[in-house]
Amino acid sequence: MNYLAHAYLSFNHPQVLVGNMISDYVKGKKQFNYSSEIQAGIRLHRDIDRYTDVHPKLKKAKKIFESELGSYSGAFIDIILDYYIANDESIFKSDKELQFFAMSCYEILEKNEQVFPEKFARLFPYMKTQNWLYHYKDDNGIQQSFRGLTNRAQYINKNHQGYNIFLNYKNEMKFIYQEFIKDVRAFAWQKFQENLHS
Image 1 (tube, rainbow, N blue to C red):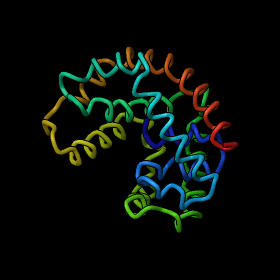
Image 2 (image 1 turned 120 degrees about the horizontal axis):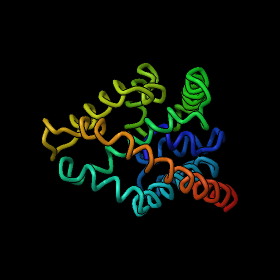
Image 3 (image 1 turned 45 degrees about the vertical axis):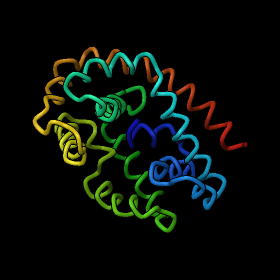
């Protein structure tokens, strides 16, 4: 899952949020350099990623994109899931509520900049100034995220039709999301509690 999903699945716990957001940039035993609550967030992120990799609904989603995006289909689906979370009125009842959530996340992260791994420290200013967490809400934001991922991907056809596939399968992807989010939220809540108290 992508940044907005991991922020949402931190369940409003500031230190878990920090760990969840930096997890991909913390390798090996370096996780033990952090406070217990940040470590809980790092572990939670990894638990969520392992869960999503094997979830049958997301396997179905990957098949929609695989012919065009190959092994990168999962990364593009992560971005798409953020789109549906941002537009899910059971999570964010209004545009203003999503904006407030995004700003709150940036504020928490900014207060913890001293613990950022180098790569996340370079990335975070762009996340904040371009308001990534909010801009997953609209089609243009998704298109920009797709473009950024395409530019970073080494082995991908730079002229792929991933965005058009997303537009063509929007309704089907929404149904997949609605089935998946209930499962991942319940799983993440359980792991959130386990990781905080382990």
